Image (cartoon, rainbow, N blue to C red; front, side, top):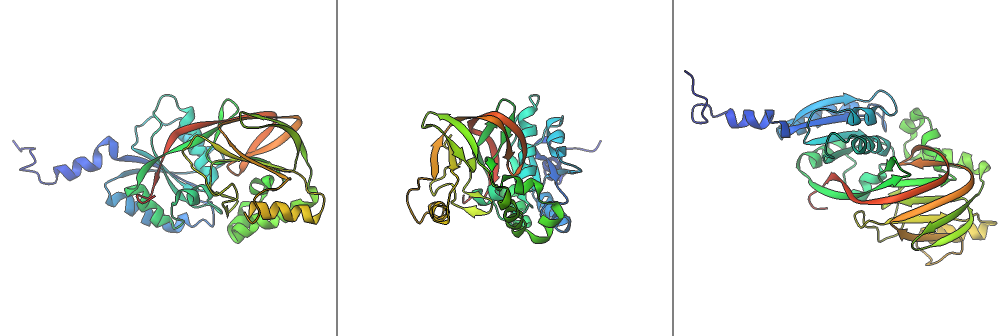
Length: 321
């Protein structure tokens, strides 16, 4: 009889490392995100993961909501769920995991392949996909805050309304792929002729106000729309607090200049911008208002309640982060 001990089979330990369930990972990727670069890099990404003895199950997304459904309906146990795509793809993976009560929330590996990749930039995850794959293979786990939007929706880094918020989900994918970040700016300029304000009553432990706003965002990110530090220069992504930015409508070029200066941190205060931190906020309007979540269309609502779920999901980041 052939022995199965390690002494007679020196490759058994390697074999176990490859087939043990805890080394299995689910890899979900959006093949059209960004400039479709994932199609060029996918072989290298899989090679990097396999060199660290991961067994990879691949799933290319086919339509919006696909990543969410795959993660929500997963039945196998995985060490990690890895996603490659834009911030919207990551949002779908996180949401699907929150909706799957049968399986624990496992750490997420993120390979940014979108146009702006705000969340990855905030966490120090490299924009180069092969380098990001190495972070997945050898990085550390980071407990990150998550936003709950009303009762049953989530966002990883931003919920917003008003001017420019429709730019991301209305800009055609092929235009995004061709022009990159410039596509957002071009579409935003086209939106300037449609500027309007929204009246909100805002309630939080820190502030209670009622005013007219042209734009608002509740964030947990150092970068939004490709702009660093627009939410403040002391952002902690695991402190249980959001950064809230609410901007009033300027009536002339001087007031607009003041808003820009404030957001660029060249002046300390502005009468046209409310900016504060909170763990919970309720915003009510007399009309339906369109919202975005992580750059994707998030629905229309008269009342929105947003809660910070502190350190509620794990994501893999560089070891020196």
